[in-house]
Length: 304
Ligand code: ADP
Ligand code: MG
Image 1 (cartoon, rainbow, N blue to C red):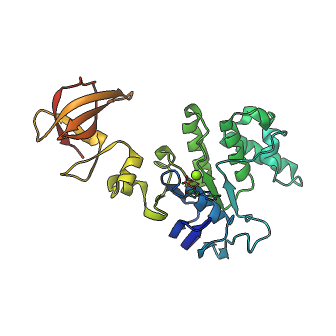
Image 2: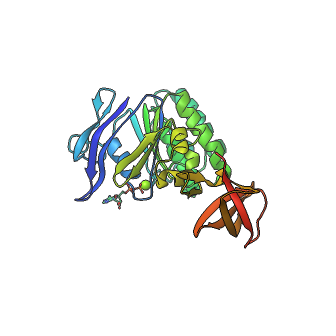
Image 3: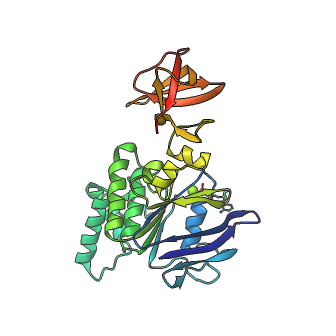
């Protein structure tokens, strides 16, 4: 189990992380979300032992994770970290990069592991390609596979799919997170993309103003977004007087109601139209199956 106790950290004087405490069980997937600059990357680096803490402790099982003041070499064998900026060896092949840290003592095992990981990150057909000529997204997948090669007990992933195009993203996410679950590898993933969280994360930690604003299951936070920041993570939402946060899909056009609004514009969203309307001088958003013309008067009702 990962046990983070009252962790505080600053690069210089101003604190970046204040009194952070949380746990992660073996095999759990914990998502760390927050606005850009909220400290997600810093938290992962600190968990990896890249910096010394101002305060607090990090334990993996009974072992304390310590910073460079106490360790000659940063990092531990049981833990792997894939940075937002990955560093690969450009002049050797994808397969060689993935197998780089696997022992040559067991060539068949090395070959088997490399092939398995090529499949997980969907790069089998690129095995012999030099990393130098890959796209950013392909490089990111090599970095992921390389981190998984030695089967760490815990993996720290910083926006792992950020460079990967939408065509590949969905299936790659499923493949990687399934692999981690199957192997019971604990995963801490920093992201600002709800698609990386919903359906995969067991818990979701929300960082804000250097602190943990919330730590709960995605389901709980989706259904009880106690803060704007949390609601906005899940999608377009409204703050209405009567009910706290109402997602755009929870507002419906009805024959008659007290919520009278005037349509301002609409956005085509594929499966639905997102309608922007004016309700008592405030902008509201709701989903509708047809476009609605500007100036149209409508009545809205909350359907939760
Ligand atoms: P996020 O990953 O959520 O975007 P970061 O952890 O990268 O956030 O950054 C958190 C804060 O720490 C920001 O204010 C950023 O400017 C600052 N910061 C990040 N890296 C460094 C660094 N190496 N030295 C000094 N300040 C840093
Ligand atoms: Mg970051």
